Length: 130
Length: 102
Image (cartoon, rainbow over the protein chains, first blue to last red):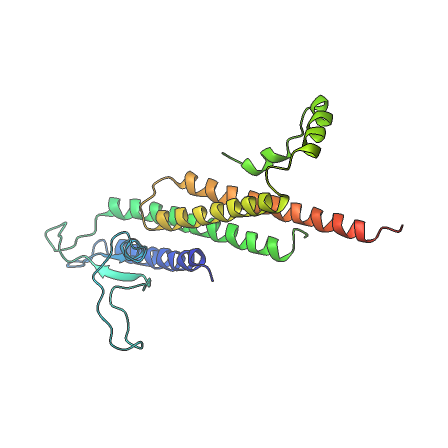
C-alpha cells in the first residue's frame, strides 16, 4: 500500500476518534470536575513526515519498538491544565463546536481523497474500460 | 499548467505540414518517440507524487488550502486517464497493423 493510502486511512481513524471525543466533551459540559480531551494525530504525522524530526532512540535489536518513530495511531490526550468554571470543568462549548466543524471537513476531505486514489487504481486495473 | 500533456497533441497549421515533413526527412529528429513517451510518463509520476505530498501535508496541518490539494489530485487523475487512453490507442493501432493482409 502506498504511503498516501496508509496516511489517509489513519486520518480517517483519527477523525472518527475525534468525533467520539468531541461528543464525549459536549455530553459532559455540565459535569463538575470534568476535563476535556483531545486527539493527537497531526503532530504525530508532522513528526513522521520528517520536517520536525523527533529524538530517535538507538535500537539494539530489530524487534524493539521505535520510540517516536513512524507510529501513526491517533491517541486521546486529556487536557488537565485549564479550568473554565468554578467547579473545575474546562469544556468550552464554542470551541467544541468549531472543532466539530473542522473535524467533519477533514473527514470529508479524507474520504474524497481516498475515493480519488482508489478510482485511479481501479481505472488502471480496468485498462480504461468500464 | 493544467493539462500540459495535451499541448503536444495540438495539430499544426495545414500549410506547414508539407514543409516540416520535408525538413524532417533531411534532418534527424530532435528526440525519439520513446524518449518523449518516457518524459511524459515521468511527468505523470511527478503529478501523482505531488498530489500525495500535498495530501500528507494537509493532513499534518501544514497546507491550509483544501482546493489546492483537491486540484492536485484531479490533475493527477486526469493525466493518468489520458495516459491510459493513449496506451490503449497505441495497442489498438499495433493490433490493427498486425492483422493486415498483404
